[in-house]
Structures are given as C-alpha cells and as structure tokens.
Length: 279
Figure 1: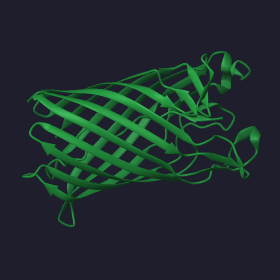
Figure 2 (figure 1 turned 135 degrees about the vertical axis):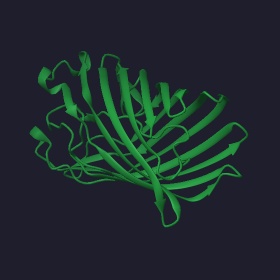
Figure 3 (figure 1 turned 30 degrees about the horizontal axis):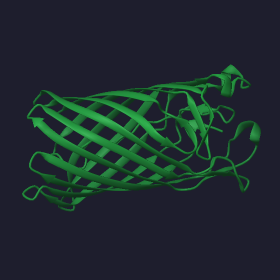
Figure 4 (figure 1 turned 60 degrees about the vertical axis):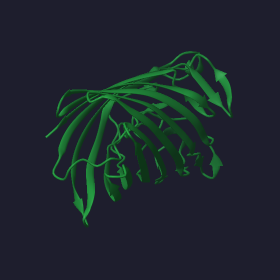
C-alpha cells in the first residue's frame, strides 16, 4: 500500500483572473501530521504516524487566449515524508520515508465567462502531472506516484458585495504504474473525482478570510486485475487567511484537517504558509 503525499494547488479566488501580463512567483510550505489509518471506513490503527514537510514553487503568468483571459502555471513540489508507529513496525525503516522532488504539474486555464460587473467568473483548466518525483515501488510512503496524471477542472465564482462563493469540480485520470517493486505487477488507478468549495470574505482591503472544503472520491487501484487499494472517499475542511503585505505581495496562512476518511491515513493537522509576489 503506497501513499503519495501532495498539496492542494487551488486557493480561494484563484478562479478570478488577474490582468493580462501579470506574472507572479509563489512559494508554499506545508507541514502535515496524522496517526490514524482507515480501511473500508473503519479505523484499523491509531499508531500510523505520517508526517510530511512539502515545499512548492508556483510560477504563474496571466495572458489572453482567443480573446479570453488565460493563465499558465507550473507546480513544482519537493520535500520529505515519513511514516512510523506500530501499524508499519514490520516494514524496514528504509521503506518508510521519501525525500526529494515530488511530481510536478503544469496547467493552462482560460475564462469563457469573466464579468466583473456582475462578479461572475467561469474558468476551465487542464493539468498534466509528470512522474518525475521520488518513487520506490517497495515504499509505503512516496513523494511521487510513478504515473502520468491528467486532470480536467472547472471553476465557478459568484460574488455578492465583499463575499465570493466558489465551486470547483475536477476529474483526474492516470497512466499505469509498471514498477511495484517486490509485488511485480502493473498498477492501474481508476479516475479520482473531486470537488472543492471556497467561501471568502474581504474583512478589509488588506485581509481576506475563507472557509474551504475538499471532497475526494474514487482513485481505487488494481494490480493484475485484483483490487489493491480501495476507493478513496474523504472530506477535509480548511481555514484560510490572506494578508496583503504590500500592493503586490500576499501571505496565505492555512489550517486543514480531515473530517472523514474511508481509506488510508487521516490527516489530523496540516499547516500551510504561502507567499506571493506579483510583478
């Protein structure tokens, strides 16, 4: 059972385009811990100590595409992750940790609807994730999946005064993983469906707060036609504060917690800090 470690890439109001020609460099650091392991909706261990320190570089550029606002972004994660505890006591220490580069992603998005007057935006984006991250088929924790991933995502944003409501559904497809180490099989992963929501409010011109929720379903894996990891079905909630440090500099501070997990580890606490500098 291999668990990859990643970070959410969409922030509140990311589906509102910035002016043509705007470029930004973003740096995200996230630290997460969890000690419960679930299978078929039941807790099978409360001593699966998963921890991760992940950093992400996110260069982004806004332009126009066929007369519509467009965005181009790279997501380059790196860091380390490890597991310990009684649930994995039988696993050699070398197979319980991973460090280095995680799988990078690249996206292109555009906005068929971008009505500033009515505060309505509708965007479409496509993501490609390359299997360049650190991966060992014998590991129970990996920064990479050893699979190409292709995600289609849309985002609808509606504003009411200083309030913005966002709904962002997506579906992600995966190539085969032909390296399972000692298992000697080919892994196939079914599509992963997700939806996230952001409800954000401008407290003042320098402070935004947001309540975020994420739900994932699907992504079951098979080895040689036999179910290996069962379907994911998890829900997380997050609190976000965004501070304007300067007209072109912003700081996000976030706290996330899993509230429901059917399969795999439960994240008890995840803290994130993101710094953005726009040019």
